[in-house]
Length: 177
Image (tube, rainbow, N blue to C red; front, side, top):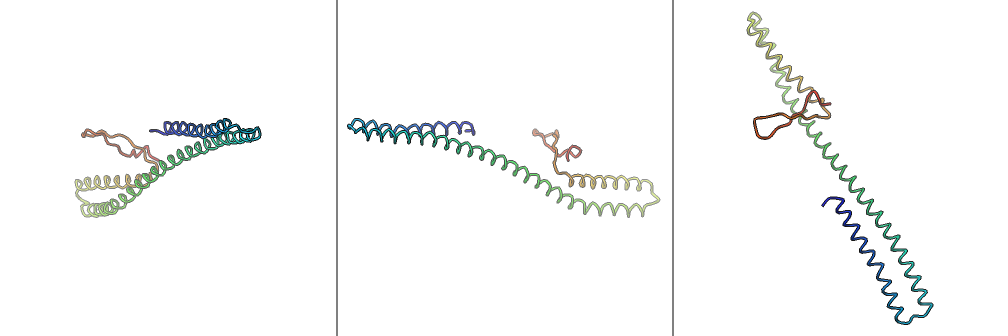
């Protein structure tokens, strides 16, 4: 049952209850009328019923206003909970990226340093120099990607087609803020 259906049901039930409450004093008044009340008692009875009916009308209005406020507050609460969930999700992504950046960059820097040392040792071999240069370039690319990921505050997601029946999504490094 959605909020609008629930709201309509509450209004119907409230209206039925207030109508029933309004009928009770009228029935009591009619009963007393048949018991040959005096004119003064009749006037007092009419006055009491009038005051009660005014109370019922104003009470109904106050209750409706309270129900509307409760429904509005419930909607705001739901929106705030959705925002909180989104903030926690983004926080978890950020913490994961920072952890991965740290855990990958530390050994990656050792690899880059080792490549530099190997390049110095094999200065005369162009083939080895070329392969070590490619290795260093790819290692630095990994480091750059990790730094970009660490700076993302609002990830943008893009679809990735895979060989599995389910498509996957990944963070768009260029489209994210």
